Image (tube, rainbow, N blue to C red; front, side, top):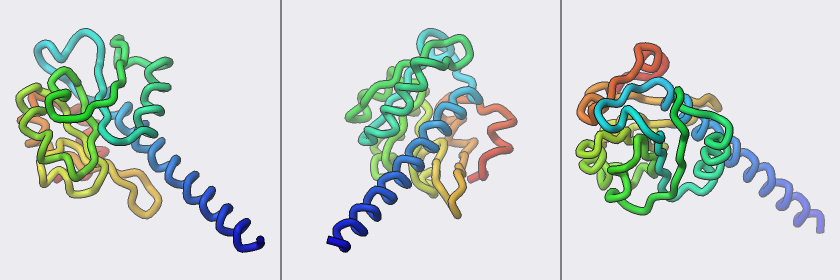
Length: 163
């Protein structure tokens, strides 16, 4: 019985840690959204964030969208399943394994491609979010952002680790 209680506590602590990481990543996506400039049709209307295969980040961003805006723009958060869904989004947040599948569609659609693992800027992401030594960090590839038709603020460039 004692082992079951200890294992249950370990599971709850692990789950809570996972939720905190996902909450931090969702908040980072929101913060980044406020520090980028889109051109053309992506610069007005609703601000759409697509999330692939991460229910927790989707839930947290959806909750934020009910209370916050990107500038004066309403935020719409939606679940996406493939690169074809990226064209109408301003930002897509995808697992690292999907970065290369989304890169071309994001460039064509002028969509910011964010991923959840260090090093994915080397595979085409504009921004890679990760936790290192318990602290939130992100890599930023200015050349990838430029290829997406996105201009990052100087503050964003200073906050991120350049790739």
